Image (cartoon, rainbow, N blue to C red):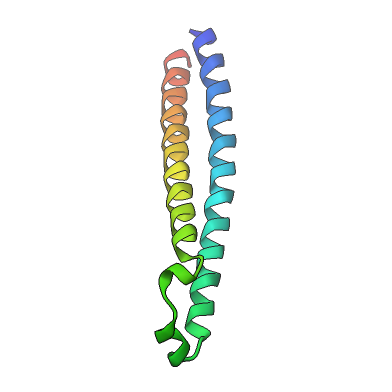
Length: 94
């Protein structure tokens, strides 16, 4: 049983690292998206009417943010699941 706990501790640590790195990518993509939106808001109404979405980086930024969000949520769920199982295994031994 302690071998399973050791393996689960390693997996949980790796999941935590993955969650932290995907959180950084998520935060970065959100900052970039917000900055692009702010630039569009600062444009004059006339310029806003002339510009098309494809003339901006918004499609790429939205895609990047979507991918970062998905990766972060998946990593977070994996970490939370591993943490729960680790606590359950430790409780059985303790």
